[in-house]
Image (tube, rainbow, N blue to C red; front, side, top):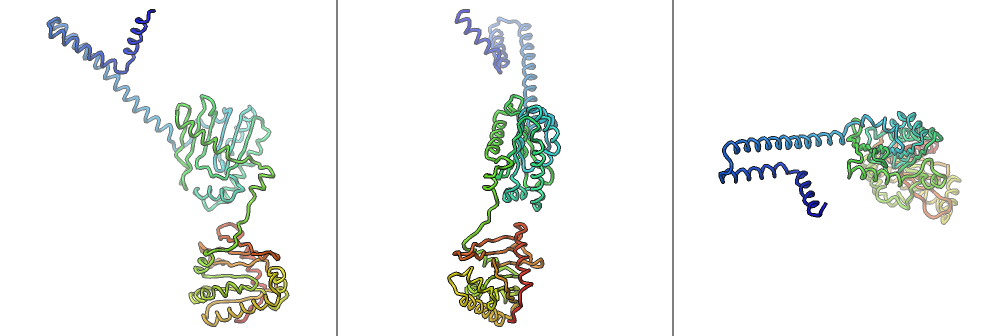
Length: 434
């Protein structure tokens, strides 16, 4: 075929397939018959037939347009209901069973792992590649952050137990065949993910938005596949980034050491110590002499006692051998006599506080060489408050400085542990008459 004919054929094909071809036909037909009628080249019967034909063609075009509008409206409605859901897709469980590649991401996935354990075993036996990502149960900060946005935010240990239960279930699937990989993350996931065969044309991903303290199952839930040209690869890429930044489970010995819990120590308590003490209703203070604290904050102690704060001091008995141990171990630069003198001076300050304020202050002396001094703020059940805390400092053996730490009452069992130890020392100590 010659080039002109090919060009003409291409023009005809484009014209016929053009979306506005019906409008062009109507316009050309109307123009032709208008010219013919004006020139007297067409009689009335021919013009009437042409007019009816053009009206018929116009009606067909209108029907086509209305169908297109209806399809657009229907497609929008379908897209909304298909993508944003309040529940998981009905075919999700079946598709997970058939998957050759599966990535599950969640905070604990307790319900998912428990209900799909048998199916996961079958998939692995058939050679599937299964990856599971959960919150690291050994990272207290991550578990607390994950629990804080759930409906049972006060039950941190419950979430930790669910994570461990899921990990135990997954451990039981090792050796089933296929390839099972489990990782944990310290970056709390804000979405749950079911990525099924996302490398293939039939792949899809289900994303669950984790609401803040939802009253029911978290929503919305999105189902996306390869037809969603932008958002499907977007969420697949995010899921893969989360996976790549996570740590294998169970961890190696080196990883376990790096991830082991570490205490947080400081050189000084900072202004928060006095700020919290000023709001306390009850203070329990232990130490060797506490001479420095009493001397520097004497006026504050007067104010606290006058305002009704109950204050208890537990100090090392300056007349006991324990003061010699303290001087040797903790105050290498001081003699035992100097340490004993500081203890007696502290007792004099406490007696003066009682005399000048008439406040509720009690002092006891222990003959036990204390390894730790602390300030317990509102430590009893009757005085427990949001700012209840323990501020402690270790008395190290002939080393400069004392490592200091602070624990809030809601930080777990250790605050209560140190308070219980201080109360036991208090019970075994000798009361001092002020």
